Length: 179
Image (cartoon, rainbow, N blue to C red; front, side, top):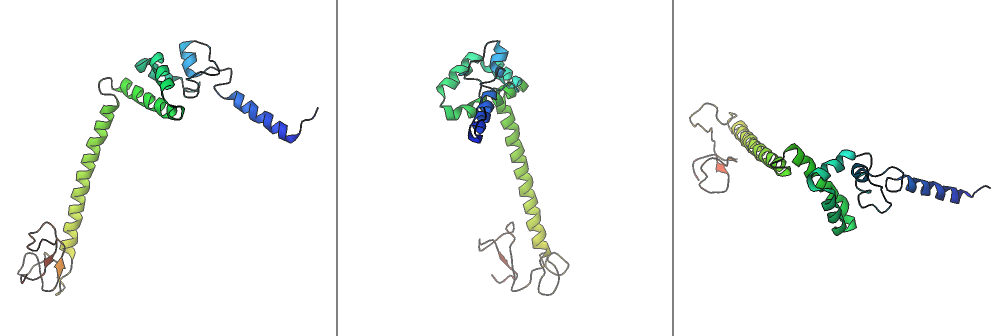
């Protein structure tokens, strides 16, 4: 008997759904690890597919299957995937660093951010210093080049040099000494 195209497409969809990890013959990673039959309503199946056995092994080693099951039952269904991902990350971090876990990784990253911020600040200061020293004056010389003044100041120009003493407090210095 020939089925209409609509019904054939529906059957194909049903076959795909049945082939997913929660409905297939292959048990989820949790049930396989715990050596039990994986039921269609298994709380672990959507989050621990059979292709990722180490994910559940790590979570089980650190938190225990019973605790994870209780936690998943208490969490709203739309938050379960995030909860499992957090548990898996913490479990992997605890296995790598049993004392500090993911807090150790966070501390390393915070120190790296502080170091990079200091490096960025130093680079910005060098850039400002370079910009101030390369600004041309009225007579064609660059600031810092020979002449009477060590700053190479000339009348009529304002130079943004925030690290110098600024009597006006506006971040700019007038090129002459007649403030």
